[in-house]
Length: 95
Image 1 (tube, rainbow, N blue to C red):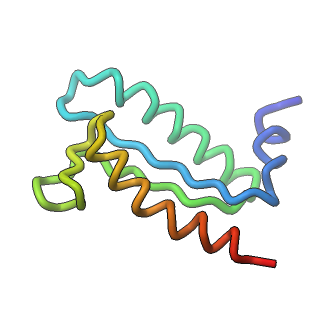
Image 2: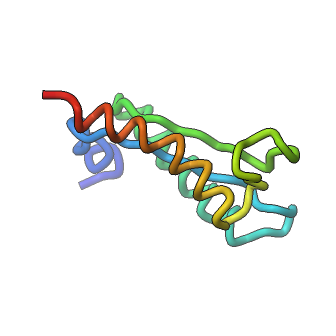
């Protein structure tokens, strides 16, 4: 099974993707997953699978809530969780 066929399988599942670009240019802990997430986002688009994608990058201080700085850390996890929770609840609220 190819990537498009696999990506098309979650059509009935709400998919949300979040990624940052790290706290500095050499931050591989964020850059590697960011690249993979971007590729998956592109495959989902090509397969016509609706989803939410947010590359929050490396925000300026105060730009994102909870002090998210683009890193793989609690401040960015808190930011993404506060964004995805209402999305999750809206899906669970559907009949």
